[in-house]
View (cartoon, rainbow, N blue to C red):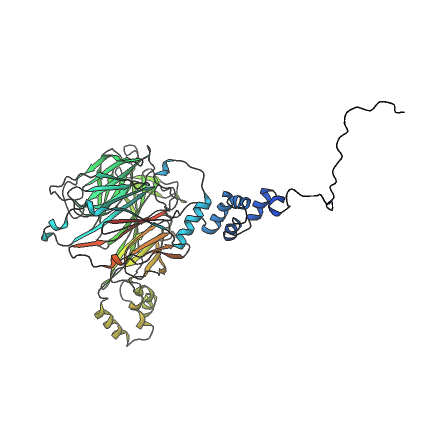
Length: 578
């Protein structure tokens, strides 16, 4: 007899048999690699894969596709393959002295910490392979003046389309003579806005010769754009990127007198409050906008530098700027090469209290050594340095010097189509020449036949080709008061091959070069990586002969996501963010 009575409740169910050999055993989930490891362990394994294998794992399962798209994995892959924390080719606010660390426009006014590294990797891969989507933007010929109304005394009209990229905006203006010149601003949804540019010229016909976008960080989120006329007059407009049609004219300048030094501005750079312009006779004008009005402070002329040229402006401090100019240099007897000049432009912040012996000394904290720049009460050039790629020894030249110059003689050109720089690289595009000075070549070869074989190859016309671009490395060491300071250098790196037609225009920014040929083909080169790809093949429509009265020149510009080209008034956009 038990000590206590049993509970009347039902007994619990018996335990099930868990032996694998039981005939009624049916597992609910098959054990596999995907469900047996934590996500952290899978991500650790994926971190040892290459980007090619990482893309292949995304087709395995949904879980692997989710893990393989991890942003941190692609950040590591992007830094390993491309070696930088941003897309190449961006323009805008310059945050480093070498002009390479920049932020996009107009998104530079917003602080966005998140980056889609996988999307950035795809865009960079499209650049490397030349994969893009073609979009036609706008036809600017509808805004031009009817050319048949032009008088014959005007002669041939040299026209091109000016292109400025500002974030999602594409700003274009044609240099065709027009009675109502306008700026066409195209946004992302392909909405076109027009800004009429007033011109105070006595004649009824005006022509836009250059555009310049303000590179300084905006204080109110607005963009500033300078528009220049062939008369030397220019206007600066301010607008918001969300509503470009509501632009206001902030500054206007008319030269007191029209001279060749101030007319026909071909290049301009703008970093508020500094504005620098370059005319077709190679006169550099400096303008100061810090007082709220445009003040012309200085004009410099060069008699040994010629267009085509390009300008790059960066800010070392609030009132200290560095301007780098690349230009064509004549080489005896009738050839051309490339040269570069660095100009330091400064202004004293307090001219009344900082005058020391007629000039102010400024110590820049950005330099390793305490180099003092003389500052002027007005925005003027204080120091300059010049370097050329073609060095001809002074006086008589012996045989050993001729052998040292052999490589330089082979790179001289009979004409120059374009010259561009980004402050670090310089690219020289040969022009299409009808002759290569055959008489001089014949006389040189005849005179060299009497000398040894080493001196007979001094003139090397075989190296000249209108389709091969010359790449140079511009070295501008930090200026120092030391006597052992290194001089600036312009070293030849290599020749960029790929184009099959003479080059019409090139664009260079942030270590990337894009060239537009006369037949419409487009090539892109990564100057630091040493790679190149064809973006667009030859266009048969561009090979047709243009009327004699209209001489057009193709124009190309790019940023980190697109290439914009213009020819005969038609603008074409090629996007790489696909």
